Amino acid sequence: MGLSSGRDEHEKKIFDIIEKIKEKQKLPFDNATIRLICSIATAHGGTVNNNKDTIIFLPTEDYLNGIKVRPSLLAAILRFSDEIADDYNRASRFLYELEAIPPENKVFHDLSNSLQPPAINGNTLILKFEIPYNLAVSKTTKLNRIKRIEKIYLYDEIIKRLKKCIIELEYCRKYSHGFILLNAIDASITVYYPESNRKYSDNIRLRLSGYPETSKSIDSLCETPIKAKNGEKMKKIILDNWVYT
Image: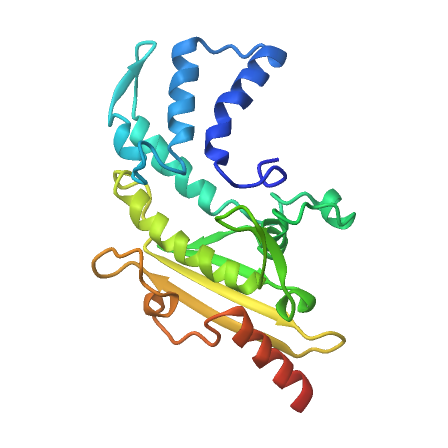
């Protein structure tokens, strides 16, 4: 549902959603519980007072109806869980098959449809992407920061999201009190050639290291060299291999 209406400020929609569910489903929550749920959910993205460190505004410990709760811990777990919850189960397959996805949201559905549910191996998060051939050599669409539709390679969006994922992992670990033990991400990206067993594949490993810096490039975060740094270069590799081999 969140992808159908776009990702822009989606973390702020929790208030409206809770109110609608409360009216129709008669939620058995008192006002204090609803306020706590909304404050935790709102902290899973965006900004608070123009500060991206949204969890800092939540208390480490609190009491709700006589029960001890840890809002910042819950927010950290929710925030990182949401970051890795964009697999194919989140996309609207019905609208996708009808080609009825709005152009401003299409890249998000393309990404979800290409991503398998995540797995964990020890302290490593496993992400597997399979990009359809047509999306590897052409562009999809999204809404940019100035609210205009732009064309973008799905691969570029995946790389952007992988970089964000490792940054979110580093951020959420600060507030997880040892509950989030992951320290690396292994991502495999595969494109199968049409009517052929050949494929383009790359494995990208990102690991927490050094001083946190959000302006790092994706290749500086990888332990091993990345084949294609953007969608245009990946397209060239795929087409060159298709024509000459």
